Image 1 (cartoon, chains in turn brown, cyan):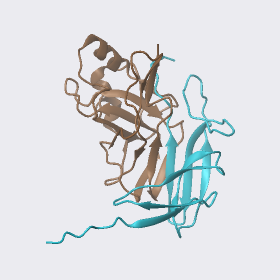
Image 2 (image 1 turned 90 degrees about the vertical axis):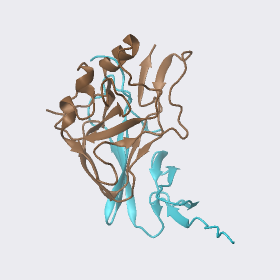
Image 3 (image 1 turned 45 degrees about the horizontal axis):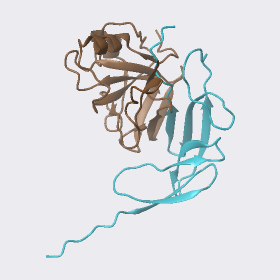
Image 4 (image 1 turned 60 degrees about the vertical axis):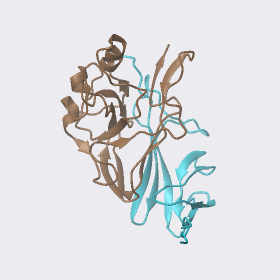
Amino acid sequence: MAFGASSKIFSAFIHDSVAKTGNASLSSATAKAALYNDSVTPNQLVTAANSAYNAGVWAANFVSDASGWPQVGRPLAWGSATKLTTFADATLKYDSDDTVSADAHSDITNAFGCLVYDDAATTVVDQGLCYISFGGSAQTVAAGTFTIQWSASGVMSIAM
Amino acid sequence: MTIPILEPPVRDWYCPACKATDQTRQHGYHVRYHTCPKTRFLSIAMLPAGTAGKVIVHEREAYIGKELVQYDPEQHRPLVSAETVRDNGNDLIVYAPTATASVD
């Protein structure tokens, strides 16, 4: 059991978006990033129900700080980042501002990755959008600030 | 009635790697970042003036494969995080890879 070193979009999210069978959306402003330890074994091909926050493998092994990075995760924000590229771009990119802990004295121990999910999805509650591996190594903060700096390639991308 | 205007507090910051300084005037919790020439031109969290610390860049050791990882702008090495170590703790910037739809 290990988080591994791969970052993937859930196939169920793409399928449900195209088939219009779910209501998780990249256009909503309600995505969150929840942290997990190395005891989670993610799989991009699980059902929508099992991709959701607090379900399937994502129902345990949280990494959190009560005030700085709660178990439900920190919200993604779009102050400067463009949330979604247009249909005319060769790569569909979903981006966000960097996600930062809510205070400067967080204790976060052995975070190996995060689940990005839509907190407003109701067809499948809190359906997962993707998971991100932090490179197969433990990320720990003691009495400090934990920041996820999203890539210039976005939180997720699909090459057309 | 006179309504007092509260000035936001001035906070002094410095970079433990290149010693650059900056000020912010902002209410509430915030972090000041800057692009550090001494740390491969990465965006590094500055420290409040008077706080001792150092910056450590952690490179990725896991196989990259098809992962869209982040590289440092100077040496183009794959990155995991930049850590600012203080006497009483540490701050961390995790350079997250991009999630893709491909199946390995």
